[in-house]
Image (cartoon, rainbow, N blue to C red; front, side):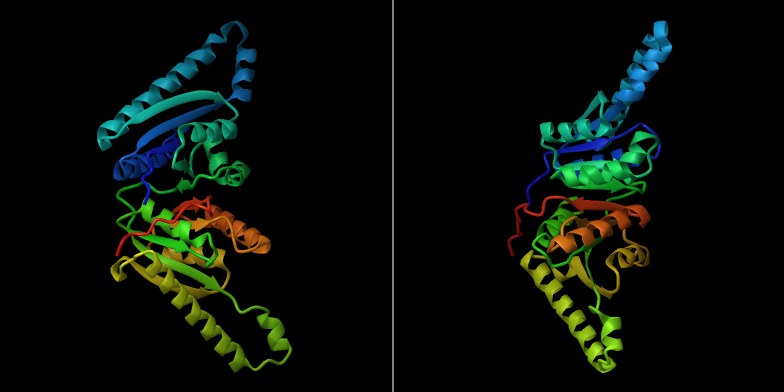
Amino acid sequence: MNAWHHLLAATDLSAPARHAADRAALIAADRGAALTLLHVTPAGPLNELRAWLGPQADAAERLQSETRMRLEALAGELAAAHGIEVRAVEVDGAVLDELHERADALDTGLIVLGARGAGWLRRLAIGTTSERLLRRTRRPILVVRQLPHERYRRVIVATDFSPAAAPVLELARRAAPQARLILFHAFEVPFEEKLQFAGVDPATIARYREHARSMAVHRLQDLARDHGLLPSEWEPLVVEGDASLRLVEQEQELDADLVVLGKHGQSAVEDLLLGSVTKHVLAEGSVDVLVATTPDAPVHRRPR
């Protein structure tokens, strides 16, 4: 697998946002990568503050100076704790533009956000800005909810067996190289209610259900084998029902600490569906979420 040479973590320096910085540093240490901490002060509110303060506008500059000092202190703390290179960047501007442009300029392999920041970061992680970022960037995004006490241990990897499945699995292995992977697939019997109304034998529907489940398990086994996963490194999980609801249920039942999924499906219709799954898991789940945004990323298999 290709190493991530650089990671980018957005922070607003709130206590909850510290979770994202800590997780980014932990992953950077595992990958031998550098880390940039980015703080963006929204330009609009800053300019309004300067206009309102008038002759005392230098107070706005003092606020920014204090922010830079806190950001640099955090960078130094993470560098010392994890033995990695950490750079602090403080800018003002449009949050989405700055984050996207910095990620491209640094060619970062992963963008890390906190799900429970304050102010602009909270809106970025769970609001419409996050969805715009997912549509705009080709870089994977990790949304951190939990305090990272340790490396990821149990990771649910959602797959719909589309061409995007391989990059999602590789992304999970890159972010959590020591974790046990749970390869997840949700299926539904198409038009089940209409089939029942049309008089289709319930036994026939039950046979289709078992066939769909069996085929999904075989495809998960093929996926794992094609990517060189050892039996001790993964397990299959095939469930019936709505993927977004089942994912949130299973993350709790299985005591998972990360869910990995993509944003693209097999068709335009499934692309919309999977997009809704991603948004539901981001909004309703309680564990970290890693979204693969590059379905055409190359696949690097481990030699057997």
